[in-house]
Image 1 (cartoon, rainbow, N blue to C red):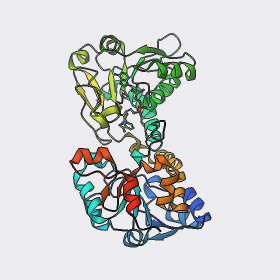
Image 2 (cartoon, rainbow, N blue to C red):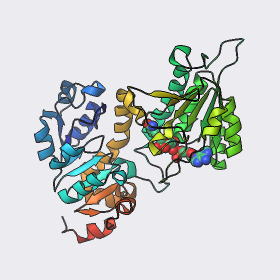
Image 3 (spheres, helix red, strand yellow):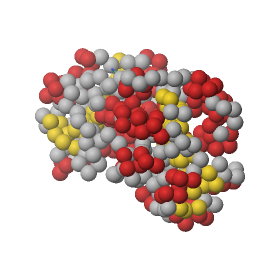
Length: 375
Ligand SMILES: NC(=O)c1ccc[n+]([C@@H]2O[C@H](COP(=O)([O-])OP(=O)(O)OC[C@H]3O[C@@H](n4cnc5c(N)ncnc54)[C@H](O)[C@@H]3O)[C@@H](O)[C@H]2O)c1
């Protein structure tokens, strides 16, 4: 199979969908790997590194026009819509439930679109979203520590304290992947960490893996109100699958927080879990409300593209190999997790939530595959 890797052209996107190590694995399996000129530069991978591992470097037109399978990181933007075509399998983050123009462009082009974010195991895990949550969680603790510094508008507190001076308090709301990773780094910095969770099973698991080094407390409105008032850093890490984040930290609660405290609302990509949260960017990551510094960057992993690219491609490569080695049809029939990733096939929407979001017709993947001419 010819596997193309396009350069990301969305502003401030520095990741690339395949590393030179990944390229070598695919080349060794007999595939033809074509990388767009400069595609890896934002993640510090030079064209020569891909070439040294058996890939070919080509201009944008050749990559899009000749690939059987095209790998990207972000969804195609409007200037890329004319490149979508029948016969191409696109594997990338798509998020089309929130993007009707792209949904229509995909359907009209006849392309097959497989979304990283809807690849889902039978245990309801999202293996291609998890690495980004790990990174965002770890970054949130770092951002919290950093923006506590006085010259940056913070309280002027060293999160880890020193011998004789108590450490700062970090409150993590939501103990999933983001929350666990935030807690690990906050603990590593020497902070006093509390996690509020709603799932008792999850709290049992966290208690085991964190060896009792954090306080695990049942989340409730009263508990959140009391805990945010004591915290130096609050990390918002809740998720209700398929829904907007609940507004757990109200404006009233914010008024009770310490002056110069930091609120890192990682859940901002789902609307944020504080009433006062609004999305920010890496160039202007923070703003202040009622004396509380708000850090609400919607694409946190974008700040560390070397780590993000490697973590993402570690997770995507087995799926890329399955599609490349077997073809999409056989790959999805063998792996229900990958099958859930298919959003668009043969001009049909095969992901129900997307169809519902845009009031379009939904066709189950099995029906589209059954209607296909064999081979
Ligand atoms: N800003 C970014 O760059 C970025 C990057 C990655 C993930 N995220 C976002 O971070 C959020 C968390 O992602 P995740 O992968 O950790 O999800 P997850 O499903 O692993 O964890 C969410 C946790 O929140 C808990 N929860 C739900 N309601 C709660 C409540 N009322 N109180 C306390 N806990 C509650 C759940 O029980 C679950 O354990 C999501 O919104 C995700 O989209 C943002």
